[in-house]
Image (cartoon, rainbow, N blue to C red):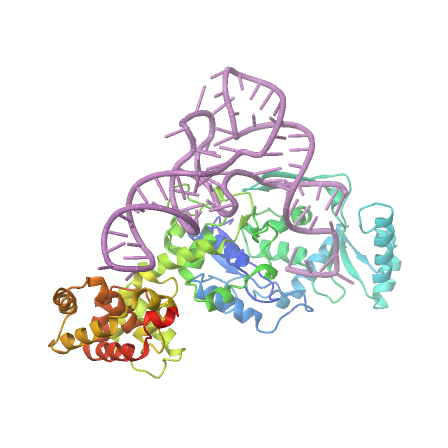
Length: 491
RNA sequence: GGCCCCAUCGUCUAAUGGUUAGGACCUCGCCCUUUCACGGCGGUAAUAAGGGUUCGAAUCCCCUUGGGGUCACCA
């Protein structure tokens, strides 16, 4: 009856948007499940009504799907263990909490927030650990029943026995011991009837037959509470794996303060999902070899929890940029074409009609020079519009006194070409240079400046070829008119 | 502060008692290229400190230091 199929879950709380740390946690859960032919479940932990953010669930799901992390069960993909929203499972938690009360593993607490605050202050003043003093555990059965009948505001607390050793077995960290003295009588059911994370999480993980709990290290210190719960319910414990944290450059826990943390932000900046997934997978895990470029399905083959690191990892954007460029370069031109068209449709060039043939040439020419799709527009705007101005420092260096004259001559020669191909421009330029007894460079550099407005980019003959004869000539003529002589600039 | 976790180049990491401590990003230099990239070659750069154990320690143990997490009717 016990099925040993691996089941993992990602259990975010809908309090905002998907964090890159959350993405990695989700990814590891996904990869581990897939690697073991198991199931990956999405469960929404919406038990905090105060922090609930409208639209967060939809955003979480769409972001996960964007990244390619499709879940086998979850909201919208209802499985055997639905519902997957904790707010829809309230009665389940209540029943379980009441069961614990019957077993004396939990108890009702009627203490006011004021009393709790005073208690905490007093303990802190005395240098003690802030901890509930089990005051309400001393209430008689009659007292409790009367208060309940009177509808007094109450919570249900975990009844932790002091002096016990609690062992957390973690695949990543090994055996971690805690003393139950440091475990507070955690609230399980809040006064609004909602469960806390600890109860809901344990109950659902058990009911949903989760075999591996893979989550961030910030949960390690509350795992003893969960262990206690499993033991109180007499349930089999899942395998725990606490992932190292993702860090800011200053090594604190990755936070909004020091840069973007929302997956959405990276998406909006133009990062490819392939790059983000690849990058985040390597933050805390390696296969052990030197391979660093991965696609999601390759990760599915190789991922293992045993090779997850213990130490926190700094989220270093430079490496992400490199991976983005790599992934973009590895794509087929036809795929980049789709991305480029999307980019164009959201740009100032949206009303221009470029043919696929034209765009594919641009893609081929720029492929090795871009990091983001948007770079096609930003690094080579000259493929989309005639330069209106010319880079001054390049002009100062490359636009010599004789440049206008040389360019005029080149225009004349280009004019005579019929259906020229790239090599024709090149040959023509070289012939012209020879005739005029100047270096090729004396023509090449001004030509580049004239047609592109800048000093960097693909081979100038590629540019001219892509732009075409008429457009190139038009641009050269325009440059002759507009670029001031270097001698004028210098003065 | 209590408890817990962690510690190899600036960053991500490899090395599971025996390596000139390897790779990648970044950076620098050279080559390729009359541009810029890509690519190729090469350089700088690390075992936090101190004790043990061992023939031998980045690796095992202890202590120190440093960093982080957590101590809610938030997850």
